Amino acid sequence: MADVRPLRALHYALEKTGGLQPVVAPPYDVIYREGRSALLQQSPYNVVAVDLPLTDDGGDPYQHAAETLARWRAEGALVQDEAPTFWPLQQAYVGPDGRPRTRRGFLARVRVDDYGPGRIRPHERTHPGPKEDRLRLTRATRTNLSPIFALFSDPEQRVWTALWSATEGTAPWGETQDPDGTVNRLWRVEDPAVIAAVQAATADTELLIADGHHRYETARVYAEEIGGEGPHRYVLMCLVALEDPGLMVFPTHRLVRNLDETRWTELRRTIDADFIMTPLDDVQQLPPPENDRIELGYIDARDRRPYRLTLRDLEIADSAMPERSQPYRRLDTAVTETLLLKGALGMTDEQIDHLDGLGYARDDQEAIELVLDGEYDAALFMAPTPVHRVHDVASSGESMPPKSTYFFPKVPTGLVFNPLSE
Image: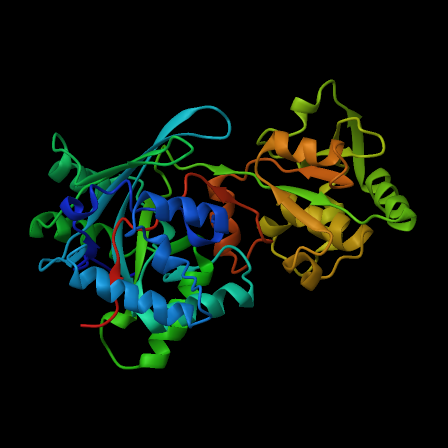
């Protein structure tokens, strides 16, 4: 079972940095060079300097990150707690669907383990490039800089009840607001009784990685490299209950380009054979609602009219993926990948992994515009994936196709760090 523990966190000295707002950043994989520069203009201590390190002189960026982290500690911008603590986190946000919600979780350290039943489960396939980058950064800094986002089952909300009893009515330790408007509020809990209650509530739980697969697999490799016991056997996580009312999964839409006449013909032939194609009144109807049918939204640069594609029969998915579990065969992303991307368009796993002729969009309007402006030839709109379906696929021992889930909001980097050495 998962081993969830408090951590002696390394964190910013807020009186030195002017609060938490100037020093946090989005996860490294959604930051571009321009965004990195803007973050560093907020504060020379912004976490992006070490989580996405760059050098101007051609030096080793990972060593530069380690030296920067050490300098911040020497300057008093970073301090480490003496007592082990849990860090409750509330994220008040408005989702892509326009509805306000609050998601609740907590930051902790979790023992690194192999994937498997009763322990840790992945839900998406990963790519080798990001893992090598994160491994080199971990070796140099010997610190978890960014939390993995993971889910656990807590139908009675025992964990949040315990944590909230220690924080209700108190001001948060730190507060930030993301560019998208999400407000993050963070507390510290070091009460031994509360810590014991949280550990008891998570003692028999299984964890499902929602976001951060590359970082988790990096942590496994790093732990084995070091060997033996010690802090390196644990990794920083933000844990959220599957039953939390603020937990939502939003869709990521598929875009395809470079379609020659043969591929256009094969795409339409497959759609006609396997799907019922229904015209829609407006492009705003393209994203399908969450339901038990396998439905896609479709628009292309030739016809420029919106359609709903409904799989004619579930047997089509079963026949196309006989080696897959039933939960996997009921995913719209799996049906899209198997029948349309690989089947009709002949894409390989390598092409999909490296975005060769493929793109993604999380914003409905962006996907529409990319097709109507001619940047892509066609767009396939996914429905939101219910959390229970993500769990069912993971429990069957399978990983979903890339970008099958979009957990929003992201957990900021820089809230706390987890040292991996004494």
